[in-house]
Length: 334
Image 1 (cartoon, rainbow, N blue to C red):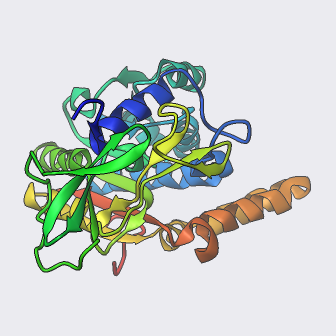
Image 2 (cartoon, helix red, strand yellow; image 1 turned 45 degrees about the vertical axis):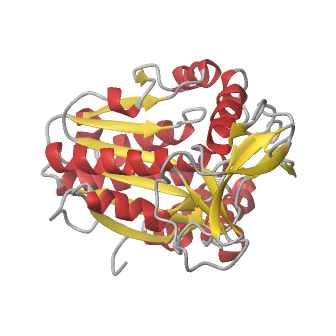
């Protein structure tokens, strides 16, 4: 079928082109992420990593890595916080960033000159690992399957529109035949592979991983593919490479992949609950008290990150650890 491209291949090409030559973050860009909303987000995640390091027995050296680190804001805030509160962890932690975009690498280097960069997570050095990933999984390419005339078919893209074809490669997740007509099932093979790799790595060498993203815990049913340009939704199939293209994360599938690879899973829990348990509200109140002129801004940012009607419920947090690892902070009773 000339000119047709399977959806995951279309999405991978569009996302790679999009990030290759731009910094998409901030009010002047296309979207804004939690670390850019408030410094408290990165500070809390840094302290989360430090407590996990203590739970590991405080190894002398630990790889502190972030996937898709944006401008480097999260890691910079995290390291600043741990230097003040748990300086021994700051001395043990080696910052590593997994980033493909040369534009974003330049922004990260300005904030984190001592970091090391990698193209792939598999390139991270050996040893105990603490891995942070905020809004990384949502940009990984998905496949979509549609129930039509009593069978499953797969979505392809041609000339800015969807078309259906017979499934040529096995889906990364099972497709039930007991499914209503018109059902759309999504699956993200790279996310499942990443969860399995992380679980295996942690089981062998120790550590913990934290994934925060927007998504659901019910399975990947429904069409969640979306695109944003200048903070407004646009057609995800039009002008590939010019808009941020994402899909919701299937946290149930992510957890199953990690468990199947020998890891332990904590959560998912809503981001709002997770951040409140880490003390983000108290930290925002401290910043507000110390900076009266910026008090309202600090409190509004904290509310945006934690309120159910904002980011607190749509975004989920999930941790992967080795079996037998203590419950990480924020996942109590999860």
